[in-house]
Image (cartoon, rainbow, N blue to C red; front, side, top):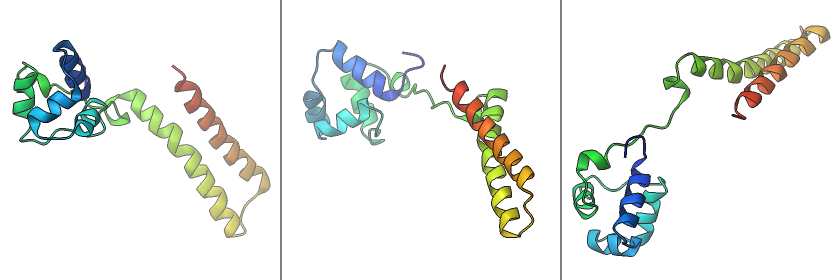
Length: 131
């Protein structure tokens, strides 16, 4: 069950045991809507519920808690840095154009250049997300 979210683990084990969300919910004194939210990773079981849930699913608490963290830019290394830069540069260019324009110091050619750089970064970022 490595690399699965807690919700995926709960859903998979429940189905393997041929149980309904309602049956799990009744055993834990929660609603079936709560179990549904857990399985969709919208919410997590209460800390006091986890040992009983693991017991019902016939897995250890460690197995149930073997959740994968959502992969954010911070934990993707160099790729994450590039992602952050491609998001930050357009914002910086937009702010630079707005501020220099407000101060009456904006050269039109420089303004278009900065906005072009920002748009290029947005395009590169969007193309990179089409994996």
